Image (cartoon, rainbow, N blue to C red; front, side, top):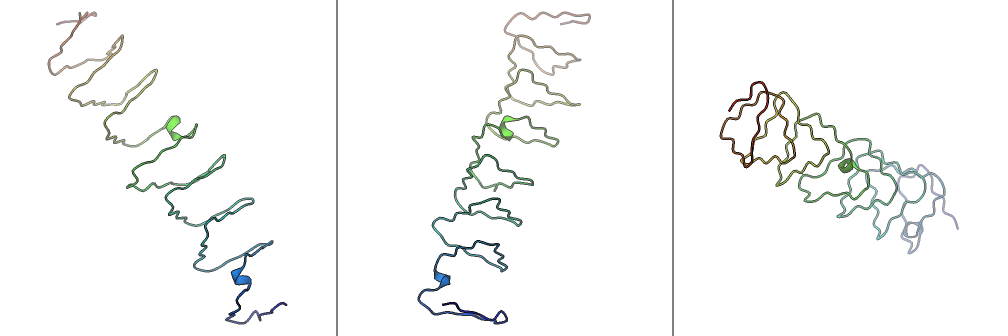
Length: 168
């Protein structure tokens, strides 16, 4: 039988061994839950249907987060904890496989930074490469400006100097 509870009642309790609070709910309408904490304990929680809109800060404290879908759209900042030891992506298209336009200082501290490019352009009012050893490999080296070599220039092959002001 049904139990009716007055909508103005401030407390409803049940000590029945089986009631709606201890059985699955099948809700086929809109559900509005307004409280400070919703705690769901389950070995597997599935949300199926159309869109799931979360319009608040979201904390995911799992060791692994797997998203199986064709697209994940993030329309604001993504923060990765600075203590994370690993971040990877095996997506065919992502920021790692597309041009990056960086309009700020870049500080790269690692053992090897490898630039592989058909054409590599380093430009600016001052371009400083500071290294104990610098190796430049290629068929041609074209220096189109006044060059000041402040130190010993050593060659392992014949050097040809051409031009109006070529002097040794």
